[in-house]
Image 1 (cartoon, rainbow over the protein chains, first blue to last red):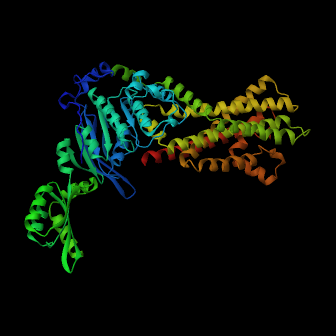
Image 2 (image 1 turned 180 degrees about the vertical axis):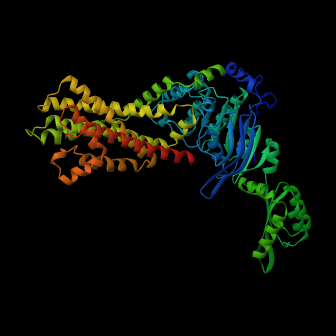
Image 3 (image 1 turned 45 degrees about the vertical axis):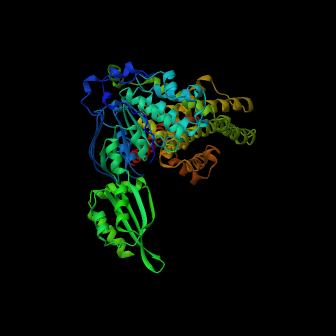
Length: 361
Length: 257
């Protein structure tokens, strides 16, 4: 994954104190924000369960997010990210457990007045203009940001008279972002804000999100791009199958999640000592071993998902001098999520996996 | 900021939000002439064909004008609510509005106001047609009373439209509304006077909201079938409660999903 690391918001300067960078935004109004409530987390989720019929969507979810950070909730489709956001917005009710937003009940007017939202699927009225939509949303809040400032912040000044239906996908997202900012919120939820956007629009949105954090706002965003989470967030919460499977700083998550895939054709059988050893290696996430016909003799197609491709390749080359078709590539995020989920069940799974592959071959 | 928040979260009505929500609802409609014109022309045309031209010299001028006025105000109430709520729901706009600090009442009030404005335009158009093309005679006071009953009587149909909009998807909503609207209007005697319908159909009318609505309106001019107005009023209230309960059940289903 080749990512150009851009300047991140300065982590040590976040929170309720002075923002690190001066921006064109309305800093003064943010600085005075609730100094007496700094101990209340932006988000508190305790033992939340959610199921639709027999399908368990969230399982005993536990999460606490302090104020003043950018948090990325990362996971594949169907991981339960949107369900979690919907619970925090009061759009969905959890079956059991407790959730609080800024110390208030999700969906209560007290909470809503202090947060902003960009939903994943929400089309606004097509025949209203950008300015009209922003004006409408400004009316909901007691101390909204100014129309001019919102237009400028979202890069919409030149589009203010255009009808929403005539905007491009990226411009629509920026309008939705401006609406989320309208109430000068302490907390902003963005549910997959950049899905379907081109690179330029995505980067514009990223810089606007950073600007929010620089002003002391808490930003919670969901994404299924590791790159996005890594570039934006101070903390990444990885979800899969309704559970939080990792939670930490981007660097830690990235090294944990960024798998390489080593593929080769070998004559090492599955029972070979090296493969048994690799299966026990904590850095190896998965091994797949399939028999392939090869000019009368037995060859195997080997695929290893690992955090340390170099070590695996070195060991393979040392052990098998006839190794061929060697290929190293970045494994997909799906494999990484699977690996993270499986890593809770420790190395034996991998051995079994390898054995099963062998048996079926 | 904090004190302002507290001030604002005190129970009270956010009039600005209410007004803007209604204003934008108006703009949305006004910018869709292909929606506005047919909605207005349909009842006028219907009345001109069946209430005026078809009935030349047949009398009942007041009766027919009132029935088509009932028919006319029910339309925007059902469609304005049913179709737009359904579309908003499907496009995620309703979710967004529920997630932000918009007072939920502002959303519904805006649509009620929209329906009433449509209703007002429709009944005044009908009045003009009636006054110029039939021998209708109606006093100013009678008209004000009639218009008030017509507009208030549209509210139960807003509730019905809401229930349909919440339960039925956007593609199906117009068809479902027509299926409810047109037969119930006919069976309630809004196209052909109820007393001209076969006796058995006249019985069926009792279970239809438009029947009770129209009888209340005829009552204003003293040309109802003669049953006590309280019965019709009570029936309409009961229907309204039923429709709102249905809508509420659907709304809860959305938030549990």
